[in-house]
Structure formats: structure tokens, C-alpha cells
Amino acid sequence: MTASSFSGGTSLSHLDVYADAAPDGICGGSPHMHLVSTEAYVVISGHGALQTIDAGGFQETALSAGSVVWFTPGTIHRAVNRGDLRVVVLMSNAGLPEAGDAVMTFPAEIVADPDAYAAAASLGDESGRAGRAAVRRDLAVTGFETLRDAAVAGDRGPLDAFHAAAGALVRDRAQVWGDLVRERPLAQAEQSLALAAAVASGSVAHLADARVHQAVPSVGDRGYGMCGRLRTYDVTDDDVTDDDVTDDDLTDDDLTDGATTDEENDR
Image (cartoon, rainbow, N blue to C red):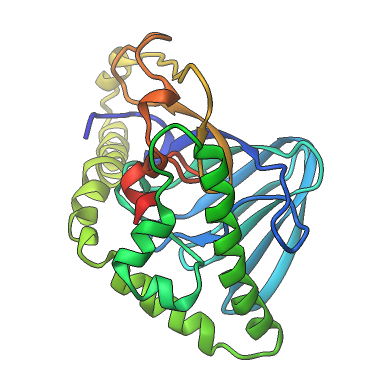
């Protein structure tokens, strides 16, 4: 992974939450869950809500310009758009979501079958991708409704079963996740500890290496993520130009809320 000094080993994307309605009449994205990464929303315009399911049950958190909300691994979340909802997404463990740290809430029989899940998650080639993103979202909403209704009734069984099935689904690709965490977020934390020790010992030599970096947004059409149309940002320390990154270069698996990969969304 290319080195990045961007704050906290995180990744960054700009999300326009889907404005079309699912079969339940609610406009928004595909409900899903991250297994290792924490995700944060900073709302920059519009209004809506974040619907979540976790060990505490079902909850809806109102969102409007200026809202900041974050949710830890295992939180099933659904972004709801009630009017021009636009969000800056910060995702912990940059590179790990791109490696498949997300599972959508398809019905249980699909999540339990890797081939069926891959087929349901895939957006295919560029032609017709908008329609397939809607179909995928609607299927995830169907599974979400089952999990939500059980949570409201006080039955944790379906949620526990989804957690187990999601873990089994990503187990093979999770073998490399530890390396990704060590290469960026852990490396940044260890560097901070080393700098703190240096300052405590009286050395500030590292201040001579101070630099400013600017992330250039991808160009072209926004990609189709799980929760909406995404503009991604390259936050590596390499110098980039407007022509270096386009969302046309990304496949559907490249894009979850936090700018992930096609591999992630196709699985």
C-alpha cells in the first residue's frame, strides 16, 4: 500500500445518498455492515436519517447539515435521504474496506452462499449500472426489514445469524487484513509514538520535514456505491493531478460508503 500521512490512517469520500425509493417507499442506500472498520458521516447538506441495527436494537438518528455520527464494526446501517442528503464519509483502516470489509443485508439464504452473494452484489459492466444498483439496494432492504422487525420484537437471533454468516463470507479475504492495518493506521500510530518520544527527549528534528499535501478528487461521473453516488479522493502522499484518478476507473466493488473496491461490493 502507498504511504499516506492523512489523519489517522483513514480514507475519505464524498457521498450523494441515493434519492430513489426502495420498495418500502424509503429513499436511500443499501443497508450493510463493516466487520472491522468504523465509519463516520459528516453531513454537509440536506436532511435524512441513519437507520441502524446493533446489539441495542433498531434506531433512527436524524441527519442534517452539520451532523456528525459514527458507527463501529457490526453496526448494520442504512442511509435515508429525505432531501438532498450529502455526506463526507471518513472510514477507518484505509485500504481495508477496499479489501472487502462490508457485507450487505441480503436475505439469509444469499448471505450464506458465496456465489449467490457475489451475483447479487455485482453491478456488472458500466452499461445499465444505475438500474442494477437499485436492484441490489432493494434486495438488501428486503433482508434489512427482516433484521429490523426481529430487533424491534426483541429477537436477537436473526442479527446473530447475520453476523456469523457475514464472518464466514469474508473469512478467506480477511487473511490479509492484518497486513493492511499494520501498513497504514498502525504505522501512523507507531510514528506518532516515536515523535512523542523524540519531543519528550528534547529532539524536534522531524519538524524540518513538514509538508502540505492536497487530495485531488476523482474526475468524471461519480461511481455507484452502496449508499449513493461517490466521489473518491486519493490521500496518499504521492503528488497527483486531476487527470490521475477518475471514478470511471473504479468498478462497483471499488465503492462502498467509504470508497471501497469492486471486489468488496461484488462479494
